[in-house]
Amino acid sequence: MPIGLSLRALIIFLVVAAICVPWFRTTTRSVATMLGSTGYEMTYTMKWSVFGMKEKMTLTREGDPKSSTSTDWIEVWEKPYRSGAVVYARDDGQGYDIGIGYQLYRFVPGRALVPGSCDWTSSPVLTALAKRLIELRPGGQRADDIDPRAGRRFEELQPGDPSGSIATVSLPSKYYVDLRYLGRFGPVSPAASSNREVRFVSAESSPEPRLALHVGCP
Image (cartoon, rainbow, N blue to C red; front, side, top):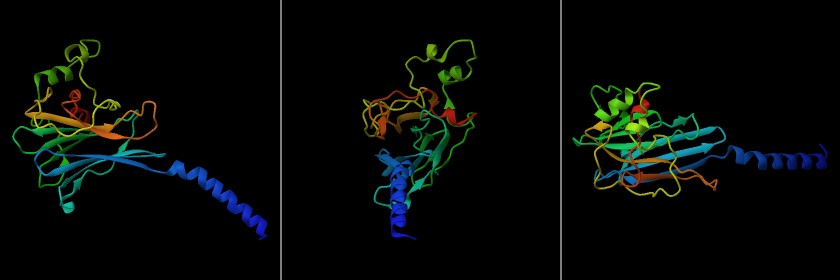
């Protein structure tokens, strides 16, 4: 093959690679916070690529990488960004309930993170307000009328929402008996910037999303 032709082919290859590589590049962002006094750190991770989005939750005992337990990578199929995770503590001290994407998980320190139950007759038990919301019929009373200014489960965090840690004092959940809402993880709306960012916003700085654990169940 003539040298000139080989050089031309190499140049074309490099130009095509320079154009295509950014499209296939994966952007990964994560944020971590300590899970109260358990000694465990929660890490929420999100990946963006030309093929879509994935998210994952990992819990690791501080200083002990072998203790790590996590969800599988969860595909984010619906947009705009139906992603993020909410965290609740159980009043009986027997662990935490986590909703990530449309899935439920239960975490007990010292054990693996396992899929939670959708049996609403057992746990978590719905409050009277939650039952009213679930029983609403189309064309009747609206959820916003009986539960005004409630957060939405899949709303993106806003640039002004402060990234922080879990509050030492948390309030009982509006929707679930014997659970305390701790806060939520999620992507931040890019607003005027295309930068990717994820944060944890505590219950002190963001209202509890309406029926946040219920979206993972029929």
